[in-house]
Image (tube, rainbow, N blue to C red):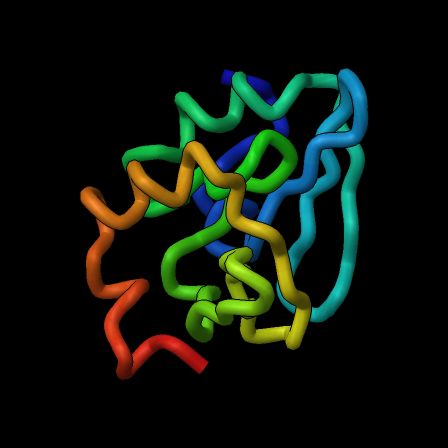
Length: 109
């Protein structure tokens, strides 16, 4: 586990973004941190902390997802900060099985 990653920082995390071999941490309040670890390292560490990998480049906290959008046969995850993140084709099928509540009419915007 990276030394800087503690429970306090995990509570402030909203989503992580892959940037080559770096990962950008997006925190509450709009602050961003960059680390030299790849996203896969954090995927293993944060899976138990209710984070979902929705694409090759995004790892999102479940509680930060406002809903899902469908446009032109593509699914998007709408975050609480109004960002829209494309859900990859292959992950969409897994997410529908693991988290069916994300795709209910109630959560579809």
